[in-house]
Length: 233
Ligand SMILES: Nc1ncnc2c1ncn2[C@@H]1O[C@H](COP(=O)(O)OP(=O)(O)OP(=O)(O)O)[C@@H](O)[C@H]1O
Ligand SMILES: [Mg+2]
Image 1 (tube, rainbow, N blue to C red):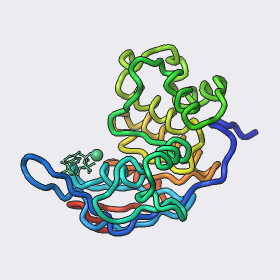
Image 2: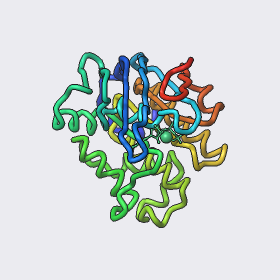
Image 3: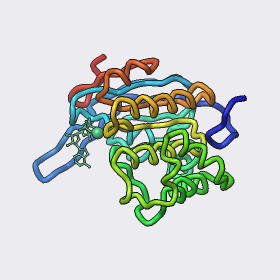
């Protein structure tokens, strides 16, 4: 029997596309062009790796694709909705329900336990609380015995796996993961990618993963290479 780790509802993955994205940051040292005309499209239910040297704009791109930041110029669409032009409230609602994020820093809530961190995401996404489902997901990521612990009682790799559980619990249509295996050894890294890909295949989640690991990138349907704020391949 197929084992369900996440919330069961869903309408499959979404098409994510970006047109001529530019992102400029004004800093005391001058203007930084973090993105300099990025255009790409991720087909619904497909997976994509974003690779490139440090500082080339990968996290900036992921944040804009996920509606966390607005680009200086350009457009982001989730299916037919222009997320980069949505007012704050509906955009926040879309973020909570349709996206799962794994940030480069894990961003777990420090005053909530592991289980509570996962359950909170489900509640924010508007789905029913289901401790058994949450436990299955944590078990699948091999952090199932740590549910009662607080984030600062975990190793970096354990926190990273909890962050993956939190990103997946509500069966989002799009999962955006920024270096989700950065602090994991090869074996744990493989398991996290296995789980991301299993959900991607079972539920049609659209998966975008930033990684420095070419072995991880090779497991995705497509790879986008970035350099200096541009897509080069
Ligand atoms: N909030 C910000 N304010 C000013 N500059 C920023 C900000 N965020 C990113 N940058 C700059 O934008 C550029 C792209 O940063 P980004 O974090 O997207 O790179 P990255 O490819 O994710 O790098 P890494 O692999 O090290 O995580 C860098 O030059 C960075 O210094
Ligand atoms: Mg980054």
